[in-house]
Image 1 (cartoon, rainbow, N blue to C red):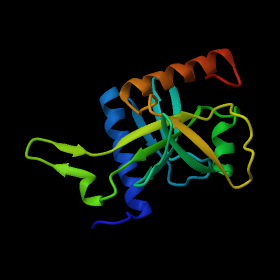
Image 2: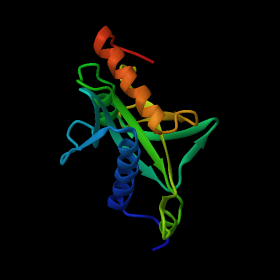
Image 3: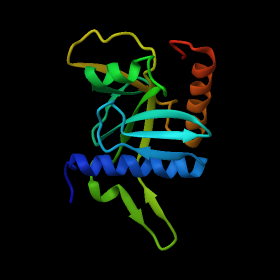
Image 4: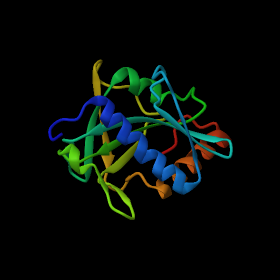
Length: 167
């Protein structure tokens, strides 16, 4: 099973990672059958929502202080739109190159050998390119239960202020 994983395997490990964190935080996860709006999953917490576009890579592009991911402009535009009921986020999951190392099962635990990073795209400027745009995902924006709480706080702030852009 070593080698490059298929897109569906990357999608499934990304969903499992988000589900595990969201469950720990007490958030519900809604999944979409069709990725028409650039959203794979929506997290909910007491009426607040945040949208995630999930991406997964075995060979991340490392930049100073984090990672960079080329997102297609069509999806970028959907996620950056201020005419959304939930702020759009890119979530990048970094997994080991060897598929067999992604999940390790022990008698008392299951370990996911991956780490995720996020970037809020809500209210960002238009992309300079027509095909893709590089999104920076800083190391300090690691996806965690704590960062999810911050995303809900930002969603609340956007909802209450009507702000087009919150950073």
